[in-house]
Image (tube, rainbow, N blue to C red):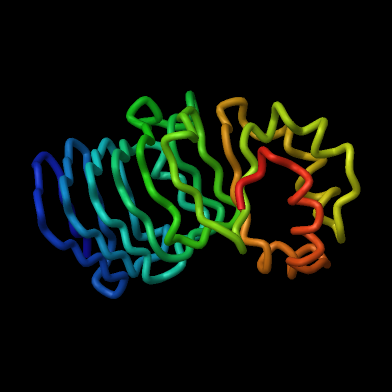
Length: 204
């Protein structure tokens, strides 16, 4: 079953996206203003195109993994909560059809748990990133030489830091969840933090 929201404006409503009910399509030509969007759906069942979220609360109740449709979406003044892994936000030129609609400004991720999430083509000074145990590299490509100048614990250096230059040029920030990445890469959150604390361009 396909559940479609398109060609309209919705204000002040609560949208419950439940994966048990089918595919959800948000857009094209959809504006959500001051809405609460509650999603319990995997990335494969959530499709967002040419949608504006303005002053919305986006509550992720089921971890959203590897969801790139946010870069085809305008997000302004929105608040995120819940777990997101491998997601991209913002303005990523030439990524895929609809990239020109991607925007991110004045959004708050402080209540979210982000891991391996990237922010593109936006001003990170307008964003609130999640606090420790998450941590965020600002300007990771431009700072990659400095980040590679120190020894990182486990496989974090070889897997993450050495490959920062391969991220898209539009990448302005990159967020990880320390306990999760430590478990994947053979270290601990405490060992990671001991290195993170050396840099003033890592937010934690």
